[in-house]
Length: 338
Image (cartoon, rainbow, N blue to C red; front, side, top):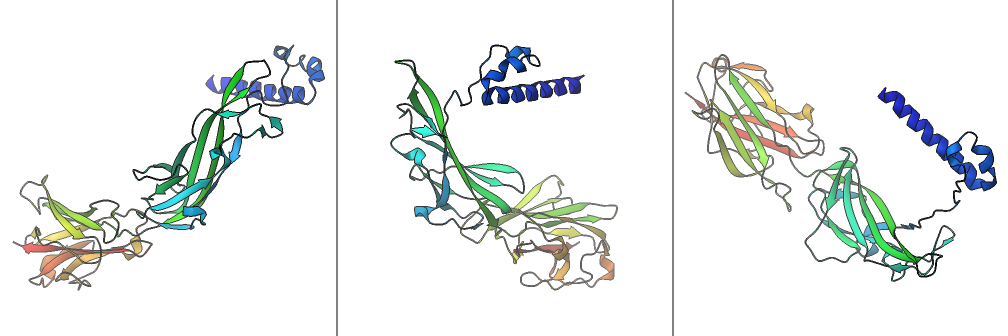
């Protein structure tokens, strides 16, 4: 029933539009068309808009009118500006050939700036606490994207005279423009591992960017650890703060505690603020920490028996991950054999 009602109203709307178009072209046709649309009998539709709402062109550019770069970098602020006659002292006197009698602005322009991430289909409003000109904005893109846009929308109230003496009407002028951009990824992945002992406890570790969106580089992160292989209370989370997020993340407070004869399995905790390159993820046990991992035993094992390996004194779990932009994270967590 709902679908039939929707189709009826769509058909009715299309019919109204068709008849309105005929009347706009030649009002004399109104008598002929009312046979099919009796509700239009005696109705005259103006061929020009009754309410004048000018749409004014707008150009988005870089600071001081310079060309805006097509490629931005995440977390790096930059200044954009817009150029439009909506900022002029006087409103336009005509729009699309229609005169606007005695137009006067009733308010200041009201710009709204947005960053649009087309890949995620999300709009992010841009705002700043810095003092900038009315036609400027400081934009900080926080999320990398291969397809985005800087957009500006402006509305400004105006008043103009009506044909009747002493009467006026308030309307709005509108202006909008956009510039396509892409945003580069400069944040390394934030991956980790979950280790589970067969028929026993499990433990996990992973990185969290902190503070988020930090610039200038380096990015910083905390490493979180939990589970029965980390703490007596498996729900407790141990946080190791203040590591540089990158290719040499070494945990020195905390460990994964394993029985000497444990049979363990691995699960990757994958994390990245854009696109993780899953083909380049490597993990396992290594000798020492920092620099390039020196694997002990197989790389990327599904299951592993510790008794089959010669575990060094300075053994660590490691995970080595890169994103599609080439940012790399290598995280080392000590192994404690009980």
